[in-house]
Length: 576
Image (cartoon, rainbow, N blue to C red; front, side):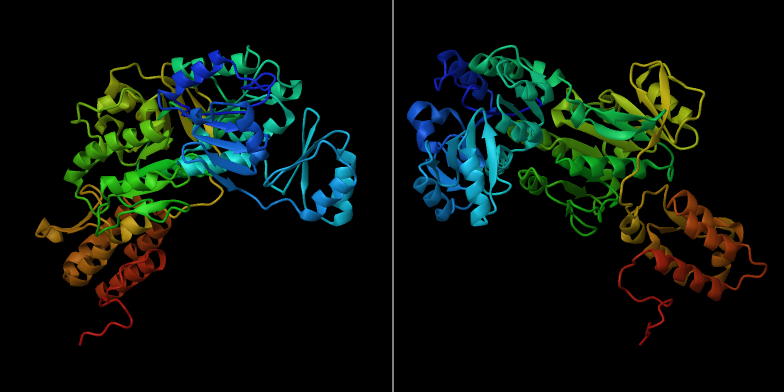
């Protein structure tokens, strides 16, 4: 289920003439039994609401006074979400005989045409207040207080997310909270402006429309309703935007090392996190250890516990990197097999996380893994797999993929590898080279070129992993020397510098003259700039061992932060 929260307005949405029909109550009761949380969001004062509505316990939270008050029906506690109305304003309005006049804990309420005197009083008293209208009602509130802010407070209290919320209303003051929700719906009797701007127009009026919406949630029909404003920007093609559905997507990003997979992933993550979607990035090699705006769990010396990850994810605003750099390659599939059902469990309970990103998917879901306990990508919200080798990923995981993004100079090969792994026909690629990516929607006969819309802030790729992490065997550097008499593995740049210090001159120069260092840096680290500078040293006619070792270490040190352990290359190194 995409939506696990239903937020509804009261007057002329849930209720008609202040009364809620029993059929509407029954529809909401059925929905709540599935685990969907109900939030009532009203402009009424709380005491007024409770005097006409006998079922407050049906709701998990009630937002009253148009966002100014939060009431917990279970605990019967009430919290003001903003300051009380200024006494000077209420005294003046009373002295002027403004009627009706309601003064709540936060709101001051009246009706038109009293708004003329209200606005004059606010201006002459020099107050910073806003006036909100709703079908003739006039509400005075502090700046920034509205139904959207009240809904956000209620969801925070319940550890729920607006990205899993559908909201329904009928009037002017409902625009804000319908827009804040993942999907905004309007009952048939709603104002035309609200119906024109909402995501879903219901056929039923008032409570009948709410019951209709509840039935759509129960049947799963609401999951299929497209909300284009929520679609995630990927890139452009022929001047038009290309966007991805944020729910139920199974996305594969594949291509050779250094081809731009991280650029695509970074762009998508920036937009997802920026829009409030909670992302879990399972990071086997420490690539996201410095990713901005997320909590990183784990480091080279500590593997995060599965329950630790689940605990952090209870806060929907917090995206998480699960850093597995401290876990041996052989142990990663077993860890992920334990983590995956825990993620689906958190989502079943709270409606988030919204996206699970699996980097180096061939490490965590290898081809040998015959069973992946997921019926579809929607069990995790949406799924993003990233890999160099689609054919090395479990076929059970690949069947969850709905779209593939191929990066690099030969996208045809990447798409062919994916199709072959699933036993499907390889799509043709449109002949016109119109961008840096190829996007294949599974089931289409043709993949299409497009140009990525990059992230606004570039992320330094692989810095920590390459500096101090554990790179895979096929990515490590091996000092073998002439005749391959050695086999010293450098798992990262730190061990490379250490081993370079200890190998004999013949071994060092053997690899230098062959161009092995620059080739490793270029092909496995994807750092063309560093590779070019090292290649200049390799091309020298008569390279000197000590000097070239020093220079390579200096070039590495300029780009990567190595552990603070002195080596012979450090200017302040002391052997004593």
